[in-house]
Image (cartoon, rainbow, N blue to C red; front, side, top):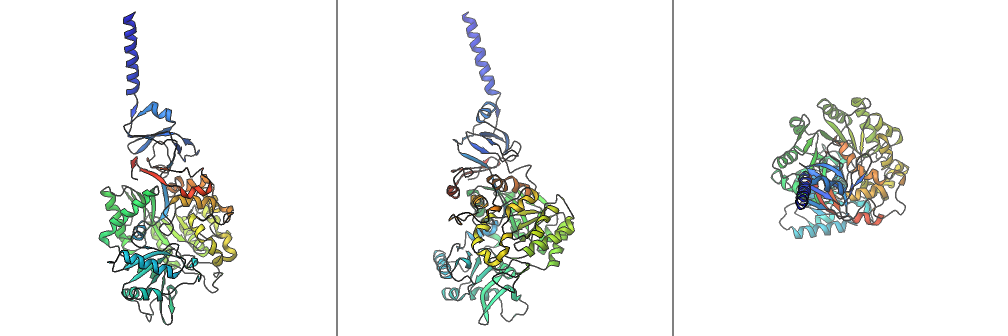
Length: 543
């Protein structure tokens, strides 16, 4: 009898040992979480297992503990876990540059702008060129464009170039204008792209001239591009971004991204969009993917920005009769670019702010798309879309890519520009209804990198001061589920990558984040306070 008891004990021990050894060893296990999978059912799980950079299993904590074992176990302790957030429209290089420039966002006067620039220069005394970004004259008592008189007084010899909040205008001092070699008597300059005061340049330059200022007077040179991009990557990780659509790239920037991907320092997943330059057309003439950098979309433009009255409208600006805005480049040139992209297998993403810009872009798209398709051409921003054009998004399967914080930044002055047409502005719900889904982004550094602000603006349609009280044109607010999908699975769908990322599901990349506040269920005023506490890409913790 005693021997039987010993044998039974041994057999029980063997069975226990065998059950333990039969568990599948994985690279990472996450347990005890509130895991927003953002799958088709929008189900909430409690745990998952990760193997070789992908989610192997998603389920309950009990199921994961029963099936898997790992040396790397994360106990989420009841906290929120979300798929890695995806920014569907942003500017990596500009973000890195802005981290090296004066931050002018929120300035309430030109005087405050100049004081901030002086303070920045005092802390960076060796700079031979001063840059800054974020000023917005719509926040000032006098909402007209400034001139450079105060800048000239403060910086008579050092070139200063300050980018407006939307990136479509700069304020440059005389030293900067001289460095550019511009002459007020040069008849080849486009008069619509600069302002004059007392027979001289006022310092305001827009659109193509603005681009030349920011390119030629950039403190970032080719040999420092990689360092600038890595600084931008850090900022993305800090805010829970694991993938981005980088919405404009000169060829040297593309080279830097590819080099960083090759040596493993670029861990961020980047959908990089070349600009329509001769160099890009020559050297990037077919779509490709290299490691975590995807290049299959060209970034085009139809117009500028609403705040600087550069967006292209069908009728005059309500606050400036006789002005319908600016084409970024001519319609025929835009059409040639679209044809080239179509013939070479590229997708097209076109910047369109005004209703005329949207309409004319859709006219050209229609020539090549012809009807329903799976080519994935996009309209970026789609800020003002009138009723006669909105159904064409569905008709030609055009993706409307939006940035909800633009709505809450613009809403208090946009009505001055648009008048009654404001009802056609920022109509995200109407645009979502076209295809049944919509991607969203931040357009950083024009807006904050923080994608939680995207969620807040999309759902509550208020700024960070919680105004207006009832929300702005709430008929076009997104639901919480729609907003979260727009930042994850729908953003992945916009780059044709929803089969491999964008949700926490078995077989997909193990990109996920943790937050200190569960912003999906938090009360309204707590949502913007949310901080990301951890960011993982392919199962590797990067923040």
